[in-house]
Each structure stands twice: as structure tokens, then as C-alpha cells.
Image (cartoon, rainbow, N blue to C red):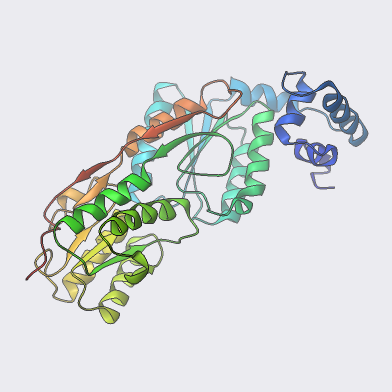
Amino acid sequence: MATDRGRPRLVDVAERAGVSIAAASRALSGSEGVSDAIAARVRTVAAQMGYVVNAHARALAGGASSSVGLLVHEIGDPYFAEIASGVLGVGARQGLTVQICHTGRDPDSELAQIRTLIANRVRAIVVAGSGPVEPRTQAAARDELEAFQEAGGRVAVIGRHHLGTDAVLPDNTGGGRSVAEHVLSLGHRRIAFTVGSRALTTVADRLAGAAAALGAAGLSIEDLPVVEAAFTREGGKQAMRRILDAHPDVTAVIALNDDMAIGVLSVLRARGRAVPEEVSVAGFDDVAVAEHLAPALTTVRLPMTEMGEQALALALKPRSSRPRRRFAGHTLVVRDSTAPPRR
């Protein structure tokens, strides 16, 4: 039996009783949504295991705490910096302190940071950034967050996750399709992609949108260079070097975030390849610096600051019976880094 400091947790009771954490929580709190038989079984198991609801944690997480937590993948990534600004803005207006944790896109680190925030008695937690494609990768984090919510805490995520919480969902698939359609409309067919790990839902969704646009144009993404690297500026550099070495005839590169696109532009400049005269470059996110690059970057704009605001606003609402969804749109922003290929 797994315990936290020797004490059984709600997740342990749920596992022993053979029910979900949500069902166990309802049974123990007397809420509707579970049958009398299930409620009785859960209460019996809880008594046998010596499980006691942490009333202090429930009261603290339910509103007495003056701090909230924010988990981001890369604190140096402008995408997360802009999301953080939205969270910080709402926090300031509500008189809340925001604790920011950096996970490095590592599930084990994410779990450790979640436990740290809970130990610090935050009122709510916002998890920003992509979740893993494989649900089992986040199973432990889901259990921790469910127990936190059972104790009165609140959780919201930004991006597609398997955490069963309120979520703000950016239009990654639609944005991927839009930027690929733009590049195709200019006449490019020798297109390469620099992407982060395909194990992340953000990458998978953006790439799926691009693949749909290519398919509509009679092309297959399987026949084009798709180079996976760290979802960072340095990753963009590494991916672009590999593309130029193996596919020197590419006329356009689509980077699946602006940080990678900045790395791509850096390598093209170092190799003496003019943008967009020789190679067009497009990114994704429209971070603040994108319009100030030389050339200014064509990209997909997501409302990152607003997404941060929406996520914390959701996390400060009372928990609903079913997870709530807020959808954030996208806008294609065409600038100087894309042009028709040379004939």
C-alpha cells in the first residue's frame, strides 16, 4: 500500500475500493453521484485503512491560502513567459502570490514540482504547456492533483493533458494547418519541419494540422524532412543544421514554435542562406520578439497572455461536476520571412 509519510491517501482508498478517485471523494464527502453500495464500500475501506480527510488542508486549499502555483516547461521560453504574465496579472488583481516552477518537460520533475506546490499549501495550481501523448505518463500527477482537489484545492491546465481538470485549449491543430497552407500557397513544395518531441500533445497536434494541409495539396508529410529536437532555440539550431546537411534544396522551413524558428534563422544566417529569398521560415506562437526579428517572422499567433488569465480564472472558480473547457483561437500573421520560392 502506497502512503505519504505513513498515512493512507485518497488515491490508496480508491485503489483498494476499486473506484475512481472522484467516486471515492464523493463517497467520503456525502456528495451525490455514487450509489449507496459504492459509498458504503468506500467508507468501509477508508475506516479499515485508517484514512482521515485532512480538514486543515481542505480549509487551506479551499480559499484561505493567499498563494497559487504555476508550472511551466521552460521559464526562459517567451511562450511561457507570456502565459506567466497573464497568470501574474490575475494573481495581482486578486491579491495572490504566484509561485512559478520549471519542469523542463520532464514528467518526473513535473510530479516533484506538483508535490512541492501542494506541500507549500497553495490554493490552486495552473499547469501550462503540453501534456504527454501517452496518458500513463501523467498517471501519478493526475492522482496527486485529484487528491489535492479532493482536499479543496483547484487545478486548471493550458494545453491538451490527461489530467481530467478544467482546461484552456489553444487551437494547435488549426494553427498547424494555417501555417502549412500559407507556405503551400506561396508555391513551396520542398518543405522541412523542425519539431519538438512528438511525445508531447502540442507537437502532435500542430504536426497533425500541417499534415492535413499537405494532404489536401497532394503531399504527404511522411515524404518531407521532419526533424525532432529540443523544443528550444538551441534545438532549432541543431535541427536546421541537420536539414541543410541532408536536404540542402529545401525552400521553406516550418518551425513548430517561435523559439525553434529563431534558432533556424540563426543557422541560415551563419550559412549565408538569405531569408526569404532562398529559404522561407515560419514559426508558431507569435511571441513578442517575433515582429522585431530581421526579417520579421511569419507565425501563428496564440493569445498566450489571455490563456494565462483564463486558466487562473478557471482555477479560482469552485470545482464543477465536469471539467470545463475554454478554447483559444489562432491567427496567421504573415510577415517578411516567407515569400514564393525562386524559380
